[in-house]
Amino acid sequence: MSQDPSQQSAHGGPAGSTPEPATPDMNRTTGPVPVTPPPAGQHGQPGQPGRNDAWWQAPQASARPDQGGWSAPTWGQQTGQPHDTRTFPAAGPGYVPPNYQAPVGQHAGAPTGTAVLDRPKRSRTGVIVAGTTALALLAGFGGGYLGANLNSPSTSTAAATSSLNTTPASINVPAGNQSVQTVADAVLPSVVSIMATFPSGSGEGSGVVLSSDGQILTNAHVVKSATDIEVRFNDGTTAPAELVGIDASDDIAVIKVSGVSNLTPAKLGDSGNLKVGQDVVAIGSPLGLSATVTSGIVSALNRPVQTQSADTQDQQQWPGLQQQQQQPTQDTIINAVQTDAAINPGNSGGALVDMNGNVIGINSAIASLSASGSGESGNIGVGFAIPINQAKRIAQELIDNGKATRAVFGASVGDATGSNSSIPTGAKLGQITSGGGAEAAGLQAGDVVTKIGDVPVESAAALIAQVRSQAPGSTVAVTYERDGKSETANVTLGSAAAS
Image 1 (cartoon, one colour):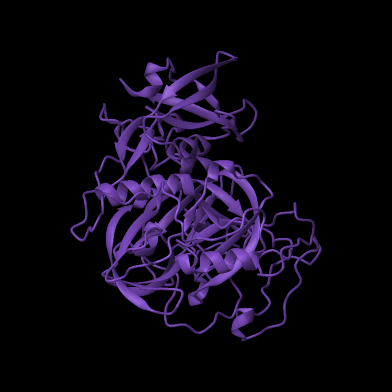
Image 2: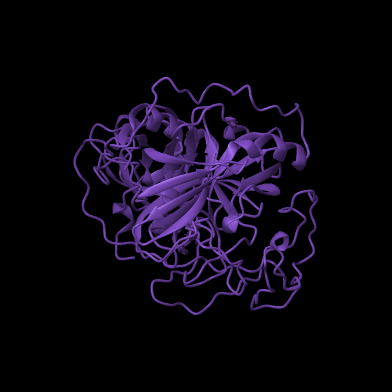
């Protein structure tokens, strides 16, 4: 990294004040963070909700569709090796050794060393990139960085009367902790496959039905730059769709299907009530296999994850479209829900659901064992979803206006480290934007933010993710250190156009 961390921007867009200095390029990886093979569990397959701490055993090669067509991967370490022993490949061009405090993400691809099912399309995915400092870029807090407004698309069919705050009456899941089968039966009609055509290829992702007349929520990387979009419903019928609006920096898009009615809208839950360890179900179209259901748990919350969106497959990968090689275009950082439910190429834009049938996240990225990003990666038990509270707010703005806004903090930010360590210990504020929320709250350059509300902030990435997950105009309690003393201030977040 050539940039002084104190000058890295960490906003959700411009605050309309003095522009910050231009920022150098990040050390971007073109592949996923290598990690050790995940412990096997019974999570990730319908009807097997229990856990098993035994290490993964290589399956027999199979070409059966119900077994995914997978042959045994080569992990590079013996079965039974302790999970905390991490092995990494030799660094290659653009590779940054991973920092597990703030993983950076890959949109899921086919796992290295696997025999992938024959399919006409390939999936767009996103990779976990390494380095907390890189996370601070392209997501600044309001110093005039990333200022492009997203104009309403000419194909927009936004309906101002649509509201995502109304609970659909069509989802019928009994109260309480239901079985995976019960949840799947209720939610499958509300999850669709999305086939997108691009100038250089085509791909398939997933989406969540928002309204009975065809509003569908998905990831931006599933439909961005698509020249043609087609939706396949759970009953096998298809219909064309058009883009309503897109927020590429938050990886959220809304499309509208033409000529349909009486669809089953998903029931959107409250991601603010999630607990680590609770059971969840992932539904989508991995590897082009529509209506696939897997199960797992919430592995972690408030995980700052950066993904580098790509318009082609082999440069970078998301768990969305299956598609062909393109160049990375824009980075996304999310305050992710981490899950061990199996997520693979084609899952992007699909639903992460609690055991009452509430959508609590939009599946977006996975960690990968591949070190180069060449080829696709697959599930290793570390997947990431955009919290539904954030996705729902952005989607409603896209439906109403064709564009979205984001919260801005009013300062640039970099990693703060201890005197004898390079490990981030907080987010150090750099340039303070005149008239912004940080200045109004009395924050100064050099202050080190250590907490937002009750959530620890251990890096610039974590602060970015927390601010990006808030609504513009909201007030957050910020704990920070100045001259060795811990203090607290209430910061009212500003608003800027999302890019």
